[in-house]
Length: 274
Figure 1 (cartoon, one colour):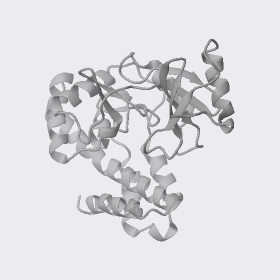
Figure 2: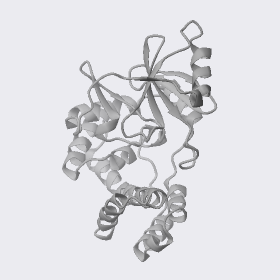
Figure 3: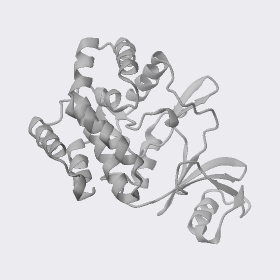
Figure 4: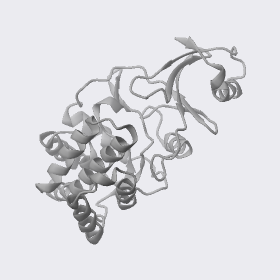
């Protein structure tokens, strides 16, 4: 690892304010896949992650809200938050294994059940403003009739009434699940908020066969009728597919990486065939 750069003076000052007895030096390296916006640190002998403020990615996504979400969690579910500054958030680095596949359905359902029994964060997740924001921030040439019809249909329907309101992670995929000493922990909570437990399952990055297995296991743990839960997840699926497609569209427009076009097209195909 390299030392902190002079350009990261705000981060150094935040670390020194939180750990005043530590040496004014530390080691740092970029975290894979973060485009340099998140750093792994060793400071005062403690492994940490420093996340940089990159501006408003979507309504409500701020370092302050991320910090508040982590503060509300039962210790051991997510990373411990250490310090929040104007441009940096410092949290625990969770050392463990990250796999390319999701845990088995029983383990994943148990993780979600634990999360959904936490105290609510205090802010709601509303998808329609996000869908409209993605429409506005994409390549105008990509605004297809299917996309417009989807927005109009969902806007007319309105979001499903929550089956059960709970704190949600809302970015569930294999890369955000750390396997540590026989338990599962979740990282990257910037999209977290309060919403329907069925929305969490609908939005998770998994195959439909995996989703069905998680529904079965979760319904049993949460004492929900599995048919009712399955139907509620199905109501949310057009919303989450549209959310995913819009996210890919905006990221294509920002990065011009055509990989996002292929991902968006897959989501649009699912919507067209439902």
